[in-house]
Amino acid sequence: MKIRAIAINTFREAARNKVFYLLIVVGLVFVLSSRVVSLLVIGDRVQVLKDIGLAAINFFSVLIAIFTGINLVFKEIDKKTVYNILSKPISRHCFILGKFLGLAFTLLVALGSMMLVFSMFLLLAAGEFDWRLLIYFLLLYSELLIITAVSLVFSSFSTPILSSIFTIIVYLIGHVVWTFNEFKHRLVDPVVKIVAYVMYYILPNLEKYNIKDQLVMGESVRWNLVGYSLLYAALYISALLLLSVIIFNRREFQ
Amino acid sequence: MDILRGVSFQVDAGEIFGFLGPNGAGKTTTMKCILGLLRPDSGTIEIFRHGYDRTDVRTRVGFLPEYPYFYEYLSGPELLRFSARLFPVATGMIEARIQVLMKMVGLEGVGSLKLKKYSKGMVQRIGLAQALINDPDLVMLDEPFSGLDPIGRKELRDIVFHLKDAGKTVFFSSHILQDMEMIVDKVGIIFKGRILKQGRLTDLVTEYIHSFEIVFTGVAEDKIRTRLGIPTRQDDNQMVRTRGIEEMNQAVDFIRKNHGRILSVTPVRKTLEDIFLEEIQR
Image (cartoon, rainbow over the protein chains, first blue to last red):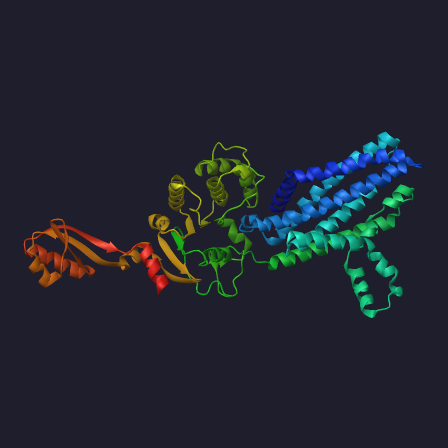
């Protein structure tokens, strides 16, 4: 009940913020613009539609995840609204959990609406409904939740600007972190080797959640990889939430 | 740096406790400690005989922070509804409670106006309403009078008295003495992180009656001088100042014996302000 109240209120805050809609609308404009681009290229137009459309959805949903995630928690502390909540019989982990669930729902609505429009657009433009879009949706959504959890950790002790920078860095490295393992034999310096090793195991391997290329190229879904990725996301998010709670529990509200 | 160094006080059930001190004395910090927003390095805090850090203790507490700031994107009733859901209350009771509180704080009829558009006084009022949403036994108000106009202050005083009548305990901080003098049962004076003085307001005040002014007429001045010192002339009357009740009674007897006419005997109290300044200078 209490967690739900905080989650609903978090969603309401996002839903009453014009920037939220702006990002969704701009994202959709990019999605629809793929139609124009597809007319300019030679080759499989549906491929181009999917390629550009999904890239736009990916970019804007990540943007929404980073900025709503960071803003919504920091704002509570900065504007001192957190005093009103924590002076009530709410334990701090309930607060963090409520915030996370609210953000998760916000992202579900944002990503869901973009994916819905895109699917319909694809149906109209190409006459096909690709059920693998559901898998794409599921994996991208998992990635967004990981990013949200990362931003929650940072914003539980840092300022929004620093948190955004940290989160973006984690996001970017997260997409190339697999190379750290792939090319480890090429690293000579032992220090660099250790750093690469540690980063590979600590940072989320986000490239697992990007199946756009497979989807565009029409490859079949590798279910075991999807299952593994979802499990990885669940564990990773749980660990990050636990970390946020630990940091937040120690926090003093001056 | 230690912000609070010697804060020890007790607030009894059903009383109005005024927490008095200048800005930066540690009032808000103390309240935040009581509410578990800050954790003291040492010492103990008990609410309703339980540890302050127990979450369920706060079920019976209401809090209005200083410079309250609430979600701007909510309307007043929405904020109250949200606040109510953070307590273990029956959902069916919530709407009726919101109506009562909106009326009590004088915000009925603002409807769906968003808090963003509220004036400072209105924010203070809705803040009070959310502090009372759970019908708390202990109401903690941090500088509740700031931002209120004279009518608002009077209304807040009435609400505080109303809470006391309902058996609630009210703990509020202020740096404005007049706000205290009119309503508190007990005060604690805090300065630089230490409680300087605490007690029943009436006790503190009688403790600080340091003299009586006796205004009289009809006694020759030289007679007075020998016994009561040089009188001050007030138009046709004379005034002498005595220390303590005994001395005042003796002086009255003396004037009456000499066929004088007592016009008034006024105890000269130190105001809380005097007490306050004196303690600070010490």
